[in-house]
Image (cartoon, rainbow, N blue to C red; front, side, top):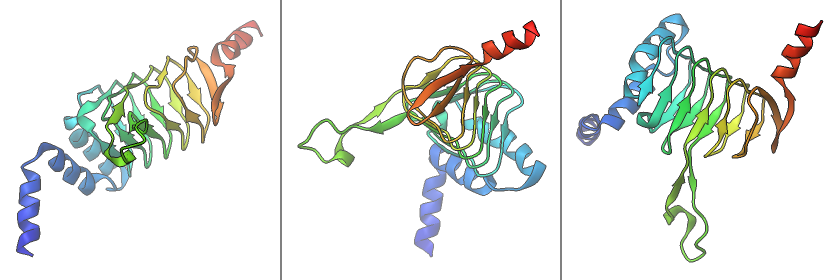
Length: 189
């Protein structure tokens, strides 16, 4: 038992470990009180954070010190953000439940070295202002979504050029519509 206590004390000396302990305590705290506690305590470790952030229950972070979050963002239930390569969420970004954003991946090019022993490849992910990622979207390293995009539930977003205000769906993801066309159609009626 003494060994465990010593290990916890050792862990608490490290900023990342303190963050992980803090998250494990508050991650699943229920209700509005939990949202307020998470919004106040967890973003302290982010690289940057705007106003009015909502962090719902179950959100997990790796390398939160590389995460930048704009104003009025909502992180949904059970999101998982791996920010080792950097993640930037613009203003007004909404992440539905179960969204995963990854900014690092295994390298596997060298056949003589086992994959776990190869260097990781880090690529920043940028989600533009006003994007909505619906439930269970997976965002791959290096993705740059421009402003106003909507990504359909269960989609896998790969690194590719997407037009602003696109409606995206599928695996692999593809453009299935434009929010600008919907706006223009409504204005013409």
